Image (cartoon, rainbow, N blue to C red; front, top):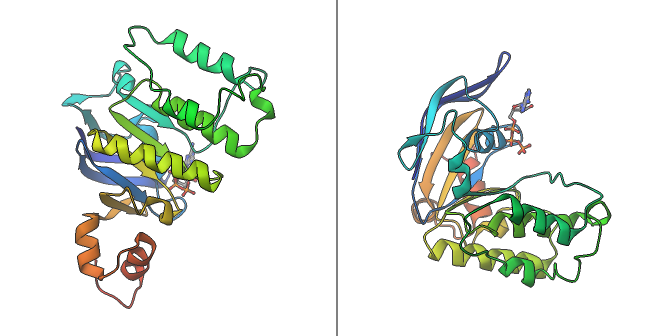
Amino acid sequence: MISIEGLTKKYGKLSVLDHIDIKFEKGQCLALIGPNGSGKTTLIKILLGLVIPNSGRVLINGKNIHGQYRYREQIGYMPQINQFPEHMRVDQLFALVKSVRSGVKGYDEELYHDFGLEEMGKKRLGALSGGMRQKVSAALCFLFRPEILIMDEPTAGLDPLSNEILISKLKSSRREGKLILISSHILNDLDEITSDVLYLMDGRVRFYKSIEELKATTSEQRLNRIMACLLNPKEAYV
Ligand SMILES: Nc1ncnc2c1ncn2[C@@H]1O[C@H](COP(=O)(O)OP(=O)(O)OP(=O)(O)O)[C@@H](O)[C@H]1O
């Protein structure tokens, strides 16, 4: 579904992504993990066409995304930092977003309802708490029923109930065969949904393995324990 070939990105002399070659398929839920500054957000932004790589290419469903924009209709994106028109109300934002996309067969408003965003409809976006903004952003990500979901720190700031609602939504999306890419440092939240772990370090793929393989290698079940084992320099798992 997504094929990344020889992808390299530099900011000046800083090499942020260094010849990345990976493929993602339908039905995968990838945990994109790595230390701060390892290139996770840069990789996501290249997939979205927001950052142009120095070399290499990205194919989505076999088509090179360079210079293209229509492919983005297949992608729902939840950014790490939400930038909303602060004076607009929540209900106005959803109406606006719906109005700019034509030919939509039906919206997915499950999160909109489950997060209680209807009741918040008259609130100004600038007056929302951090967690409320996350809910708006998550609900927008799913709105157009995209085949690919890309989420950067989606559970940060969500209360426990909202967290459960989002995780359950991600589980059902994976069952529907969507491709989900989640960048997060909160590994506990990824336990129930992750199919594969992509670990980036210094702009390179340190490993890209299925969760089953990682569980078997480390004899651990929880993602944070798995990562602790793998990253322990005394161990030689990877
Ligand atoms: N627009 C930019 N100009 C210059 N350097 C940048 C730019 N965007 C990112 N970088 C640098 O690229 C590197 C990778 O940043 P990126 O945001 O991709 O990391 P990340 O893995 O998402 O980090 P975090 O876990 O902290 O969110 C960092 O050193 C960052 O400072």
